[in-house]
Image 1 (cartoon, rainbow, N blue to C red):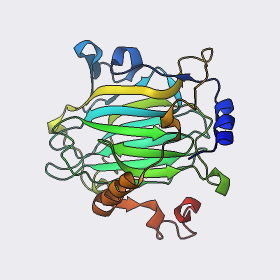
Image 2: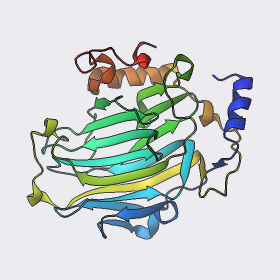
Image 3: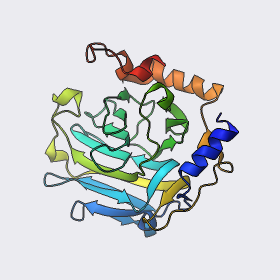
Length: 283
């Protein structure tokens, strides 16, 4: 829990931000940015779909930029033989020293599990991958994927269950995203050179078009801006999400996920990092 002095300091550091208040309507919250009609907003703004065929994938981005927030999105992933496809859902700033918080969903052969690929970039540096399988079929129905990013930590959640935490260890020399506002991006694209079983399984275009669906976007607990001229203060003392970390029950949930469903952890990959693991791995 942050001290009162820390809260006041952090409040001053992002006094330009406004608490967001949009939920659910894709027309209001997002712009389709590529795909030549392959991404569509339907049902009066309550549903968004991205499709991929042999010519192109598709994608969209948020109208707002965020500096901290609890961002929820319901996704239903590509069904059937999704090998070689990637559904990306992430926040990112711009420039050569960008920050980024990633969910990527790597498709697989029919009946084989999806892989959730997570990563955190700070100052243009990533290599912080953790990967998981899921305890349900993510193609049968919509499930909620959440990025909860605040000055204390970044929490990745699936249906409200934490699967990963990246803590703010700036005091120990570990980069953390604290100053660069990020937009939300999502896309469906072909990556069969690496996405499925290390690229051994290629995409089967006879199953195209592939489709992923989105509902129930929620950024009500967030600080955001819509343009460079509209920065307003976040009330850091009011918004408890700003200081949330995991409680004991949630740590137990995360341990269950990591014990049962984690398939890769950069903090245990000595072969990949013979010069030594990242500093945060020992903190």
